[in-house]
View 1 (cartoon, rainbow, N blue to C red):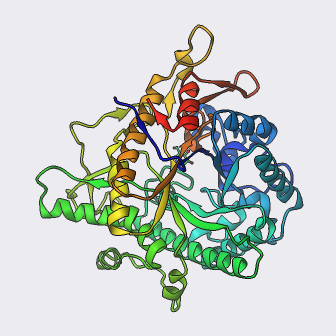
View 2 (tube, rainbow, N blue to C red; view 1 turned 60 degrees about the vertical axis):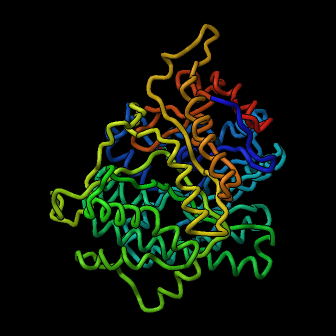
View 3 (cartoon, rainbow, N blue to C red; view 1 turned 120 degrees about the vertical axis):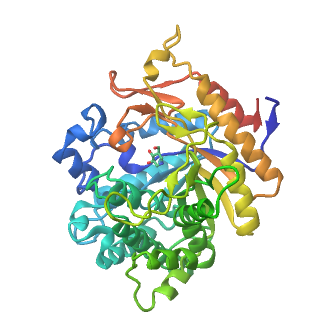
Length: 466
Ligand code: IFM
């Protein structure tokens, strides 16, 4: 592969989240979130019985981790505030939680790193879930109030805010695919959750604008949303029914969020088809005006894999619920076997062109991209470092697709690698390691650079990709 360059002002950084890194799940006044509750109720649902308590010891090792990021030439990173750490059950600031985030932001500045702050990363406080979670309008209001508290507390420190990470994934995993607690299979309830998260996003964005207008939030701050985008494809020579499957799956996963954050509305064709199939959203009078406030300043795109679909064999699934698509298995797919995800860098190029053509003026960055690999400890070299050329190939391929999209006029501003330092990953726990930096669970969470880190440092400091 020939070498190529990325623009001088393109930023390189890392992505992580509070619940997957912090640890200390029940200290400092932190409340339980759903991951903590699930871990206590059924630890055997987690790979190797490693539950949410694990994190990657970030609260203990944050200074070392910030130093590692800066030493690798990164200038930005994203983490999330845990709702269950920042607020108590009455919705008031938990002073110990607030002190931790103040310290983290201070230390980040000292290390020369801009910390992007996300407000929600699948981590519903359990007491709110018991009041209905995302199916309840009361919880939507509670989230908006939480966002306002966070803006008031950190508004002078944080420049880059995000309302949600991957709002597409939580409805899907918890309510539809039966993977995450409470493991439901209910397409309709998943869409209710998706709708309520959309309203919550818009209310939080409105609170951000108000806080910026009155000076609580700094004037140069921006707000955005981060979603997992899965460019949606079908077979060659598709039937009209195959294209219909693309319209609905792309509509629910991608257009829904792109329309919300650029136009302040949800795609009417998708809502109509849902309604025709008996899926009714809890739309209240006045919601259209609320959604209008959901327009943001920029977007984060988490890209791991495309979605490939075809016309469904049956219009209802095994639970009697609407089904809009079946999976299409592309014979040429290259798979990351550890994760079962297709590796398809071209999807990033296609996403960039979609933004350029259909959402003109929308600035974006790659907010997550990464490769999780099982049993990486088997790849140790003579000096004990993990040899991971596959990770270099993965990132190089995605940066190459991105460079072409930028060259073609897509306004992509940067790239955050997911899981720079190995972290806990939901029910997979530490099964698949994403990091350029190993976390050795057998040695007190010791950090150790993998071989690929040398390559990353060169890319991040020179912007030349070899
Ligand atoms: O660990 C997750 C993260 O929380 C959201 N995006 C995908 C990552 C890897 O599975």
